[in-house]
Image 1 (tube, rainbow, N blue to C red):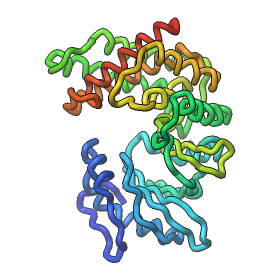
Image 2 (tube, rainbow, N blue to C red):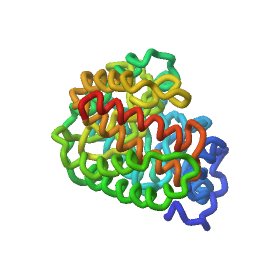
Image 3 (tube, helix red, strand yellow):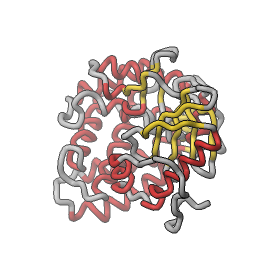
Image 4 (cartoon, one colour):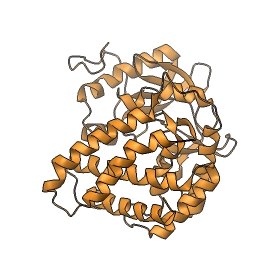
Length: 333
């Protein structure tokens, strides 16, 4: 069955399955196909039958998928996840299997055709983003999980994408956006910084000496408290790629405190990088360089969607990326 077939209609009797407004809007805003949203009730019903589940109401958050708590016929608490079919989500199950609970949630079952995952339920399940913690504590939690995942040896090759190819694709897209969008940008843009980011996307992956399976979207919203875990936290929602592990810390480092309203001083950002580098054994200058590269890619992604102004728009992304560039220079990168 093609999940993106616009002619697909949910089956009668799929049950009271809904798609929360926030999830629906996030997917549509990101260019997702509404036909998949219409398919969710049938996909959920099929998963419930396949795995003998009683579904609770869906969680009201998510950018590219639908999730709900559930209980199996044997009384086990689980989470059902239905992912919107896209390349970044393709290897989520394989990544979670590879980590096998070391720093990340356990996957209990998967159905590739339906893009469905059955995951262990995390309790209490609150996110690191929800907790009011000093930045150093916030970063220390993430560094511990990154180190635990990095300690699991995962060979390069299938099924995982290689970061060299992933970053090269991003560089091609970013370079095209620079030429198409920036000449008529409605805000001042540091074109030199954007070109520096493209160059880093092209060069950083091939220069890496510490490689492994990277999470790919290691932001505080994807780090959940789980009291039964060794360190009290586990990562969810990976977009796994194999390559330079210094690719991972950028979202964790950026999304600290009031990050959507204030650009920290570059010296403070350099200290954040050092803390995560110490906790993971990664090279601080490489972490900083990836912050610039991924920041530029984010600037151009946001601009391509017409969101030029506002602190969560391209201008805010530019300000943060400029601060990361200066922090990286302070680190000698």
